[in-house]
Image 1 (cartoon, rainbow, N blue to C red):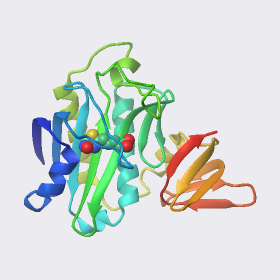
Image 2: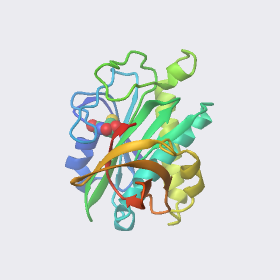
Image 3: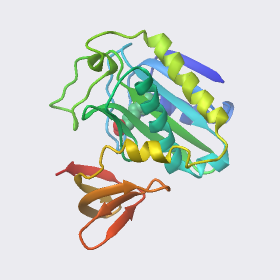
Length: 237
Ligand code: BTN
């Protein structure tokens, strides 16, 4: 496993996008600070310097890249497992790939790539930050420290622990995308919630029934259950 760390960089995702040709599968890049951190849908990702885990990893295995929705869920599962290993309860995954604790967002995941060349998984995990501009944020945020009664974490040790968990679980991965099926169903933040979602050009409203084994969100819209493979939750009603 290769790990490259920067004190400061524009974005760990952008670095891998520029350098992927020279780097191996499962190269991890982390930074103390990002000057142009970005999230999904061209949003910005702000994180105080040296307080959070900002990391991206590179996948170059074509057979894995083509299953990007599983990769995204798999990554959220690993973050959720890591948080549970720190003693946190009420950890959930908000489809498609945010991680929540006690109804607040603790981690966001951004996938970028071009098939069949590369897939980059970027993860922003709030560790020791306690001040969040919740008025500016679309969702209230939390951090490991806030959920740990204010006890701080050693960022370097946690960064290493998270990377080795990712590395180990990917190294053990034998193509069984259903191995976390039950975990995903049990940790479904949206389960039984009424939501409004945009998917392509359509807006869909209904009650979330489940996440199926292809990582589709199943929404009961009254007369039928629709399967959504990608989209953005606009509102929880
Ligand atoms: C989201 O919730 O919209 C996804 C946020 C992803 C943020 C991470 S931080 C590390 C990596 N580099 C970036 O610029 N973005 C991702």
